[in-house]
Image 1 (cartoon, rainbow, N blue to C red):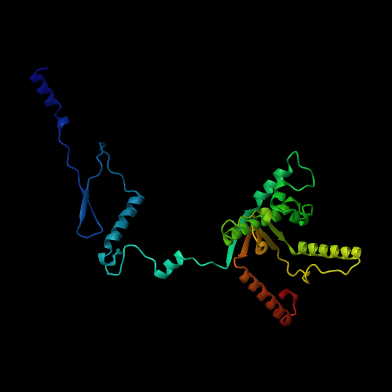
Image 2: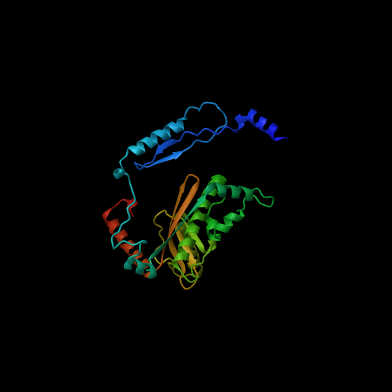
Length: 307
């Protein structure tokens, strides 16, 4: 193409090479008075008029106006303490550091656990519906949690249905788990490693049945031998209180140790807390103190609920 033809084309289409019009700069004030920043809106090829500001834009504008109206002296600012005693990181006091490095042995340890009753109910129903299950027998989970002594007096065939049995076994499961946690913290060196069948939880009715059975066995033995009946219970054949008592077989010389247990049911959950005495001397002192207090209360109040 010749230069003349090219120049004629350029002259006819000179509008293509028109320079862009400078865009209007909007100014927005910053929180600090006296400082401004400029920005240009995004370029739009369309010649349509700008749209009305949205509700969010109006709110942001009002918020910026309110912020700018606050004097700088009233704004919250972080001021670093420049005093000589201030440090970058907090430090422990000598007494706290000594307690951390030399922990004292507590007289008691506490264990707690919670069990979801519908989960236990689903497990029992699944085991009861197995093809090899015999009607009237205890399911595997029942004998896994309870010892033979507990299972004998647990009342598996008692009225209440599988829902009542699930509620009962959920409380026993939570109680034994709480005892395991408390015992493992009380006895160090692997001596506190106990399992479900190392723990026996008996309510007042079961305790009375066991003690009456021992008395009956002693009477039969005395009648057959022709001698006098001997009290094998040491004069403590009466059961007081309706709360269950827990006993755990600790490996070693301790043997069976009594543990304080509290079992609660609330809705779909069963919770339990266990208290284990670490020092047996303290436990013996507390037991003696309880017996003394019981005697004083018995003389002061005649109502049986205080005993």
